[in-house]
Length: 370
Image 1 (cartoon, rainbow, N blue to C red):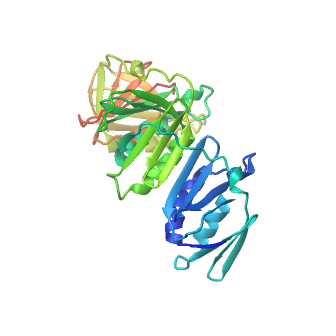
Image 2: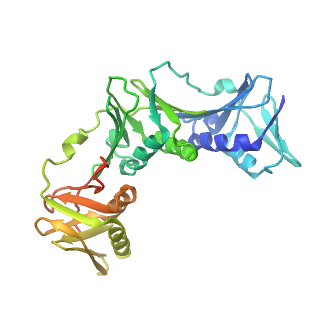
Image 3: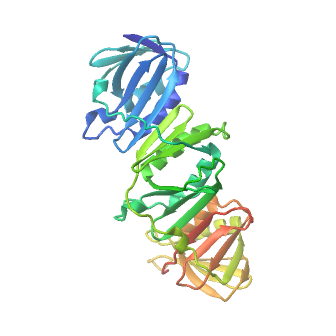
């Protein structure tokens, strides 16, 4: 069967769904994209059995058909073809021939019946503004653990209450928390832990809607799965089992030493210190007094860096070490000109927040020996 598709309609959805595809998976069909046409709509689906991403687009094809095509190769072929030429697919039982202009490609296929597509359950959906969801995820996800034995840290904690939506990420050395108002109240509280790969694919989808920030996404959660419906995209993911740490207990009741510092000045000083910081640990030592913040670092080769910037400090003189990359990642997402750092002593965690008075985001970074 021969069908004709427009590259401009095909390329972006195909690029996004193939992100989850794994060509080296033990189940060969998971290296393919499910290509299914019915009722004038093309459904494309990729999955790794943990995360499934799909997209539905309209097409001028009356016939019904389904197959699976190698996803990465198909994407590279479509990207390389001329934008002004239509793409023809001749779909047969074991192969698909792709032609456009004078270009021709033949790809082996696997029957669609072998693709493990899941059915969406009829769960209650929570509406969330796309830009708000994208913002709170980008403000926290960098603090997720990576391949930690405590598997529940390798994801993002997601909490929907009647008043707000809260996301939390921690790797045991730092914690990031961001919130946004809940405008679709359901009089219930839902919590879950979303895996890293789902968050990566979700951000890829959310990033494609920069020009339509007021659009809503619909989220449904059950005991073992979360589903995001975003315009013509759907992302489904298994959830991480386990009990997430009580993030509320991480924030100290009282931190007597308070530092206000210009965010860009601190960023520049940290970037200068990173030149001579230990490649493995990236440590920087902060000596804080009433009006100055002194930064020092060193390497095992006896190399040293030192810098001083002005600050506004209310507290006892403190000398404390931190991973400077952790500080820089927080600076990248805090949305005020000044940064507020609160700490107790050299052995306690540092609470970092915006000095704007409107942000509810909080960041904890634990000290390290430098």
